[in-house]
Image (tube, rainbow, N blue to C red; front, side, top):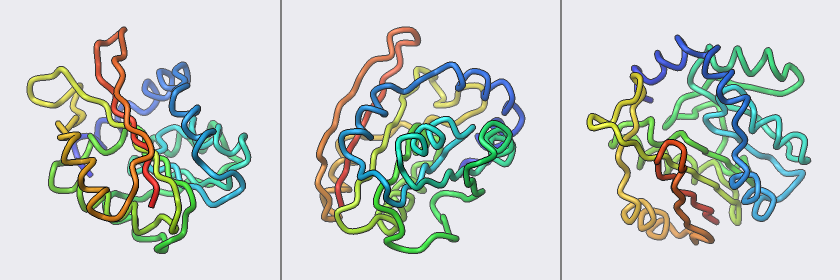
Length: 195
């Protein structure tokens, strides 16, 4: 994980928590309702303040929230003390077993990794996923020239190569879409991947 990005999340956890508490990723929730299998082991990788972890729990998923930022996890624990959260890093995620999860959400995370770590992180996500499991990934682009916004890395991910990586590793891409977030003029890329 990019250290400068983690440091930024740690330093600004409270203000980020306030912002994220007022944002609802409706499209991601629609995709989860359509593709994830309820009452099964689910991981929210890069859970931040736990907003989506809490939503998943409320929808009947057996979920754990995972994040690399200690301060973001502190916010999550404060907001949702009844849920399970764990500090872990991509690409390692070393405290989890292979084929542990039926569903994995990795929303707005991978672009915070340097280019070399993205492929290893995706391989690790596939290792954690059960056969026939579902992985939902969202990636946000940036308009910043140096790929950094307020200290956070937003790596420019080649979407075509990203898609081919999963196909090469025996997965089916059930859905790919991109959408423009009009307010900030940012592009989001959403994937639903079946192992």
